[in-house]
Amino acid sequence: MSSPCHTSALLLVFMALAVAGAEQSEERSCDVIGDESSESQMERALLKKLEPLSHMRFNVTVEKGKTENYVYQFRVCREVNSTSHDYGGLVQTDKQNGKTTVIGRINETQVFNGSDWIMLIYKGGDSYGSHCSGEKRRAVIMISCKRGVTASSFSIISEEREKEQECFYLFEMDSSVACPAENSHLSVGSILLITFASLIAVYIIGGFLYQRLVVGAKGMEQFPHFAFWQDLGNLVADGCDFVCRSKPRNAPAAYRGVGDDQLGEESEERDDHLLPM
Image 1 (cartoon, rainbow, N blue to C red):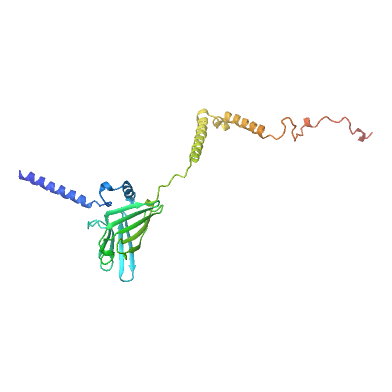
Image 2 (cartoon, rainbow, N blue to C red):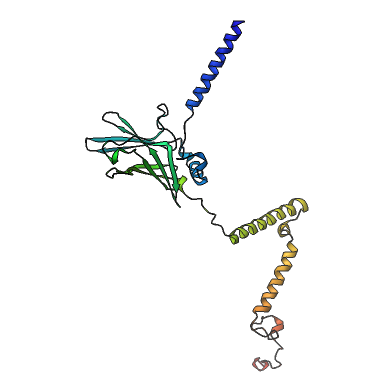
């Protein structure tokens, strides 16, 4: 009896470990500052818009002489190092001693946008030492619109740390996710014209196939409703001739043919006197 109970207990332990492992392997995402109920729809929409960048990693190296040599690692709404569980979304690593400093954390995120840019802010980084009154670091990432590019040109612009408060690291990058939706360039008239041209093409091609394959017409008779369009063309030509005529309708034509009926009567006077007697 003890064996089945022991087996069930082991299964429960394995299931609990599997669930815990799955929870740990799932990457954390951005958490906007404040309660979930206070998050605006705009912020949620912007975070959703940034999701295509979440699987990408960005690095930039900064060298300032021999004393400052840093590598900055950045991820959009994901932890740079998910195994450390420090929520670090932008991390600075000193290449000389390997020291790692969290510049901003994804669990203290702010996001807003303009017409062609998105500003992503990570707050709650590691505290400054002698700078900025020892406040916590924060990273400001300006994502500018660049169509046709998923993400590129990640770079650091400056580190503002000479103030007493509100110090920050400023980064920038280009991405198409920051671009506004493109409006259709087709006007109503263009759409109607395209529709009309498509209907005409269907009418001509379909009518031609019907006349040729079903009716068995040949030559110009393959054109759909050929007799109707022929009569219509003649009527249009007569109308244009009537409207555009610039001379009286009963006036004789300026040009006359040279047929026999145009030569007139032959003169009775002949050149008989020129013949020899």
